Length: 327
Ligand SMILES: NC(=O)c1ccc[n+]([C@@H]2O[C@H](COP(=O)([O-])OP(=O)(O)OC[C@H]3O[C@@H](n4cnc5c(N)ncnc54)[C@H](OP(=O)(O)O)[C@@H]3O)[C@@H](O)[C@H]2O)c1
Image (tube, rainbow, N blue to C red; front, top):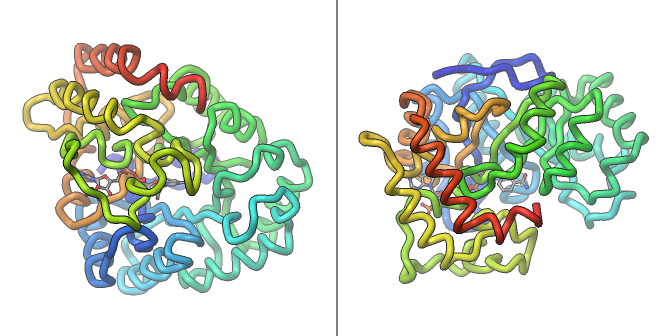
């Protein structure tokens, strides 16, 4: 699979990676053997990049990856984890002492001396302008707890603030055919600064696969049931912030844009990786079939101009009013 350098980490990662929030089993039930099988199917399909966080399953996602790394030490996998959500979202909790403790827990979970990349996990906006915070992150690099640091953001303005900092290696942001705003300033600014872009929630939580209907029932512990209106965390993380009814109708139209030989989900992933400035896309695969199909999207031919135009037109007509001004 095509590899791209992840910004200022200087390290190559596969253009299609694997998101592992779902493997923490915070939402939905994922058995351990099934989770390990998903990791293996992704790697066997060419994936060399996992995204996790210290809070996914309260460490379970990291631990499963740690177990997998131990079994496959030569697979060349780059792991990006996150920190910051184990305490209340107050700027003062983003301290060097807390960072050290969180890093040490992630190092133990993943079974590594130095973490490849640690991303601040959508911190409060005030954190982005704190010089002391970036000094603390530089200290973690000097101590070799981490090789590099990055930020996972909610808004384009937060992304631009992070990109302006010289030590930020990459930015993780929601980017998909139902979330086009990063095209305007964030992707060009990241490319100019040499900062990597990790595109998350690339399938709009599965909506872009076109498989859901009005009758689809999500489990009660699935955020797609309980966070549709941002009840538990930022609304943008669920269905990319698009109202479910609108999303269902737009997904039918998106599916009609998929070229022969590609599913709608693969078309969404292929669309993302061909936007200039994107380093890697991290779909969350719930099973082995999804992991393989998502990796295969990297091998599809570039989408032709009519499909690109169709994505833009669909966004402007159906989606823009709901999301563009907010994130
Ligand atoms: N704040 C943050 O930093 C943050 C927040 C959210 C996510 N993330 C990261 O981004 C990753 C991806 O986000 P996400 O999982 O929320 O959203 P996503 O990748 O847009 O959607 C994942 C869902 O799409 C469906 N799916 C996946 N592959 C498919 C395929 N090939 N065909 C059909 N359906 C498919 C599955 O739904 P079903 O379960 O219905 O099958 C899966 O649960 C996470 O795992 C995590 O690593 C980070």
